[in-house]
Amino acid sequence: MYSNQKHHKQHITKDGIPVDIEQIRKLFIMPESPDKFHEFGNELLDMIHKFFTEKGGIHSSILLPELAKIFSNIDIPENPHRLKDVLYEIKTKIIAHSVKVGNPYYIGHMTSAIPYFMILLEMIIAALNQNQVKIESAKASTFVEKELLAWMHRIIFRRSTKFYKANIQNKDIALGNLTLDGTMANLTALLTARNLAFGPHGRFPGIREAGIAEAYKYYGVDRAVILVSKRGHYSIDKVGRTIGLGNQNVIKIPVDSKNKIDIIKLEKTCRELEETGLNGGPKTKIIAIVGIAGTTETGNIDNLKEIRKIATQYNAFFHVDAAWGGSLLLSDEYRYLFSGIEKADSVTVDAHKLMYAPPSLGMVFFRNGTELRALQHYSNYIIRPDSVDLGRFSVEGSRPFAALKPWATLKIFGKEGFKLIFDYAFELTSVLRGLVEMHCNFEAMNQPELFIFNYRFVPKYVQEQLNKLMSRIQNEDFKDDRNQFIKMEYLNRVEKINLLLNDLNTELHKAIREEDDSFVSRTMIDAPQYFYQDCVVLRAITINPLTTPEILKEIIEQQNKLGLKIYKNYFQSRFEKI
Ligand SMILES: Cc1ncc(COP(=O)(O)O)c(C=O)c1O
Image (cartoon, rainbow, N blue to C red; front, top):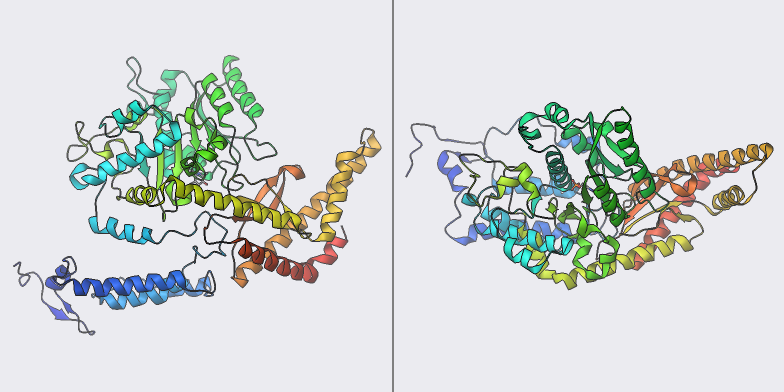
């Protein structure tokens, strides 16, 4: 046995814990009798079970400054603590103040309930401690990951059976990557697109070798851009900044009344960029056009078929950000919503969204399986060229065996199980939309496609005023100058009402947070129906299989009560003056 005596002098802490290497080593060794491990495990599982089943407030009532104070100890503990004391601290200081995102009344974010078996899968992942970067630390798990990638690739791209049989475990083909999250998946796709756009050619070694300035010079361009709708997730902006394009070269295309990219404006922008270059202006390379399936704030899906055509016409890479909606392809019934996705060059899907895995796990898929060679790298100590190491094709280095979660879930639920979950989520969304549309004090603010519904509290009196004004704006004849002035006046009043509604809904949202019985999120969208004026909306995401229509009814009734109280106390007279 290793002797620590010449290195460390053993001492005992004031809590009676011996401080010596033998004690520390014991923490790395599974106890010989399983009793001790089970004892710890049972305590832990008990704690988790309680967190899952506990009723009551969603966010815990502790104030943020109090929490900050609890975690403001600037010293790392000098001496070891007992495991059970640390567990107690986790229980009282962390679990007690964690957000109950699995609560069926929590319908505000893409983070929702997870199946309980995920917790057990996380334990297996931790216990195996595989590192997916290389086969030397990830044996079976490398092949599991490749199998999962092929399964998901197939539901997206629907290539031939022969293609999948040949490539599922082909070491030189990367059908995709598992990434930390959707942001990294988008980064992987668009970095690949950039490298392909400025790849090695003739004597030019490619952008990876020569850098951006040389690449632009060689290819004769002054500017490289990515195009996405203004509903694009902010991760696309981050990617633009990260891969050296700059914010101003992530060009935002307007959306139509259904929050989908305006195809005519997309085509026009591409044409103008091309013409500017031909007419002596800066020459622009469109690296990629990004389609969204569905949008983060409104859950809508772009017209992917049309984007494909434009991308082909302008020789641009076509990436689909399906971080939110992509998992729906598991069900053939909803495939029609994503028509054209099979023609994309790459697609992002998040497993921690509609595959109900805990955060975080992104996935990115490439149509041919050869595209990722544009990122390929080697190292002498790992990821050698002739190896099967997954790390040869990824931006990230060390990665956990997170593939186990969706891989096992696909078996436990089957495609049929996922279909049932999605059917139910569609039903919940339609119930909520119905409740809002039937209610005299609420207004629906989008047409939800994928479980994201925006609405706002608009008391009946205000709604009547707003409807009257809108109907006049739309139906009256404003041709002569005097009438133009009247139209301006109507528009002005609509704007004022919407501004005050923004304040009212912000206050309502604060009150919902304070009550803490339920949760919806809040965002601001430029609403097409109000001439793209910025409107504060409540945002509900109805994907928790434990949420019921009755719960949704309770939530709307509670919001109505709170809304009326705030309206009467602080807003009524202000609305009456408009
Ligand atoms: C459409 C879309 N793309 C990308 C992302 C980024 O995903 P992540 O938070 O996993 O990085 C999100 C997150 O909400 C999203 O909705």
